[in-house]
Image (cartoon, rainbow, N blue to C red):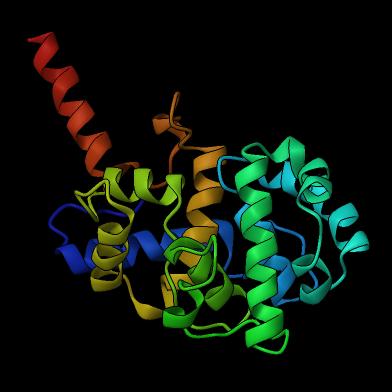
Length: 226
């Protein structure tokens, strides 16, 4: 572990990014299976309050029956609900993916738009979903704020907010632009393997000397011993 005492905020963030890149690599990985922008858009809408693994079990049958935006845009609600039922909130999600696909087919010629201003006007698409598309499909520097990113970024001291939009803004200010897309990928991996919400493995964490939450916990433990 490198000596980190006395680092400036900028140097600390650079060191965090360096270690994440070394541990998780700089490969752009998308955990949702897809063949194109539209499939990823639908899969991301379905992933709300649902695991990526579950979405990946559901989408093959969905895309086999409805292979393009026009087909899904004209689908029956009950049929789509049955296909995506196991992802949870299936009624709301079915309405959104049908409506979103219809707009893409009728207003954009079946092509998913790339700019965030247009993406967030689509049914069921907020900034998180829009940034997934921008980062993974169009390789536009984007920060996706999910539960892992919000929680761990806060623990690392890169934001104080619980609001996803503010977290995104805070991270855009402090992270190098080349790290924006990677941040979500790496922090998801970190949240699943080393820093789960309920039982973080702080002793095993390669970021523990750079983590504000870990340092605060250490201070609390020392004060209790006195």
